[in-house]
Each structure stands twice: as structure tokens, then as C-alpha cells.
Length: 343
Ligand code: ADP
Ligand code: TRP
Image 1 (cartoon, helix red, strand yellow):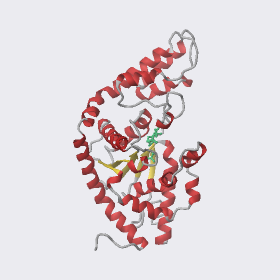
Image 2 (cartoon, helix red, strand yellow; image 1 turned 90 degrees about the vertical axis):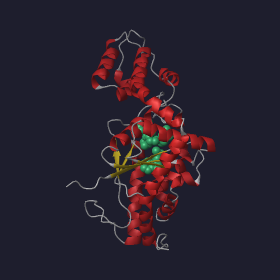
Image 3 (cartoon, helix red, strand yellow; image 1 turned 135 degrees about the vertical axis):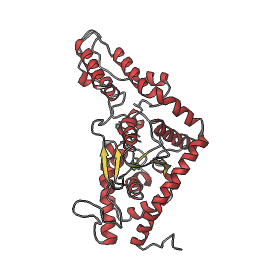
Image 4 (cartoon, protein in one colour; image 1 turned 60 degrees about the vertical axis):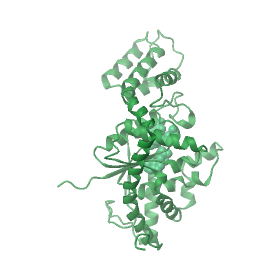
């Protein structure tokens, strides 16, 4: 007999047009997983609120993320796709989790340390975002969470919070020795990282990220994408000279798109000399267009029909809430807050 499908859950912040790092690190694995898992994916607008100060941008970026996921192959009739803030219960669960989570744990979060080191605005939301992220995951009894490598620490913190909560209110971990959930309390999730992708480098060689402005948008116009590709930083080895493909950002990015044979060919060209970085960038641009151009029409059609996107997100929210409510009831019962359904 086939058992119930495991539930995959992940979120992505609406902080600008999704880029190649988001695509290969999270979106593509999430879409792939949606074929085998019961899938719950959401637009993390409450997380974006720690930095976004422009209401119109928040709305537009939220639609852009939803449209990107669907254009990348997510079927919203099958997977549950919603906007985080449409389920305000998540804030209530975050509060309950925050009340069993020591500040010491939150101070060790990379994102918090990074924000402090760079003297960025460290508001309450930034400090608490691992707690909100834990609530995102635990509110839906998720089994697995597909994320990029940079999110592993947050998943570990989520697992810590499950332990704090279950121990504090139920006196045990609610899991057997093998980590299998015994029911009640909160369910322990696991991270799924696409190891083969690792961290996607940006055009300056650092991790591709909107915050470094070194990203290449998935559904930018071909002109925009080409401009970013041509701006990838390379060294000054002259065109004629052989080049080391293992130390080049263009090659690292090409590997994400090309099949093994196509990629081996590029590496051979590098080693052979007489092949310049301009040629390699053109090859990379063509590869990325071959992947994304066929999906761009769908993205643009979705963005042109906001009411349609809104319907999809509202339907997703309805289905998400049906799962969230009983979980939150469990939490309220465990901590001694009044039930909301039996009154
Ligand atoms: P950004 O750093 O641009 O703000 P986010 O933090 O919103 O991106 O990332 C959203 C998702 O995409 C996360 O699951 C993250 O792990 C993944 N991701 C982001 N950048 C990269 C990257 N350069 N390489 C691999 N995965 C990435
Ligand atoms: N914190 C994640 C990021 O910065 C986004 C996110 C929020 C998330 N909640 C989540 C990812 C829950 C997975 C599961 O990318």
C-alpha cells in the first residue's frame, strides 16, 4: 500500500524579481519536488516587511514571485500556493514559539550577525525572523523543507524550537528514537538541500543575492539579462591564452544550464585557448535563453492578469488555512490558550 505523501513546504521573500540563485537554489528544486510531494509554497511577505518600505513594491513583487513559480512549472491546482500574510495565524504561532526561544539562540543566526556587522537596521522583525520562519513550517506540519544551503541554520533553529515547545508544554519530544512523530505538539521537519547546485555565484563572484546587487533576473527582458551576463567579472587573461575553467564565474553559471556534454565542450574551449570571455558569456546567455525564454510568455501573461493571480493565491490561502487551523488548535490546547473552534 502506498502511504500518505510527505508534505514539502518552502517560502520565498518578495524582495524583487527572482534571480538565478533563487531559481536553481530553491524554485527549480521546489517545482521538481511538487511532482512527488504534497507541496505547500508561499510568498513570504511578512518576512519581506523587515526591509521593504514601499507598499506598491510589496504588492508587485509578491505577484512576481507567484508568477515566477507558476511559470517555472508549479501547478497551483495541485500544489498549495499562498501569500503568507493571508494566514495571520502564523503570527500567533510565532509568538508562542518566541516565548520558548532564548535570545541567545537568535543572536547566533547568521542573518542577524550579518545585519549587525554591516550596521544595517536591526529591527525586532530581523531578530525574530527565524521564529517566524519556524512558525511558517510548523503551522503546516511540514515533513521536508527544500531550501538553499544558506537556510540550513534556520532549519536547525526550527528543529530546536520544536524541542523547546514540546518539552516545555508536553514534557517530551513527541518523537520516537528515530525521529518519527508520535502526534500532538509540533512535528519535526527536515531540510532538503540541492547539494549539486550549492551556492550560485553572482556576477561579481560572491553569492548571488539581491542585497549585493550582483544578480541576474530569471524573467528579465533578454536585453537586461544579456547586459548582466556581459558584466560578469572575469580576469584579464588575453583571448589567445588557455584559461582555467575551474576559476571562472561564467563557467560556474554555465554549468547550471548546460548538459554534461555541452559543459565539457565549454571547458575544453577554455583549456585550448583562442576562446575569450566574451564568447563564453555569449554562450552562457544563449543557454539561459534556451531555458527561460520558453517560460517568459507564461510569466508575462500571469503578470498582466493580477485578478487571476489573486484568485490563485486566495484559493491557496483557503487550502492552507484548512491545514493551519487544527495545528494551531493543538498549540492553543498545549499552552492553555482558549480554543477558537469550539466556541
Ligand atoms: P536573496 O539573497 O537574493 O535575498 P533570498 O534570501 O530571498 O535571496 O532567497 C530565497 C531562496 O533562494 C532561499 O531558499 C535561498 O536559499 C535561495 N537562494 C538565494 N540565493 C541563492 C544562491 N546564490 N544560491 C543558491 N540558492 C540561493
Ligand atoms: N527565510 C527564507 C529566506 O530568506 C524564506 C522563508 C521564510 C522560508 N519562511 C520559510 C523558507 C519557510 C522555507 C520555509 O529565503
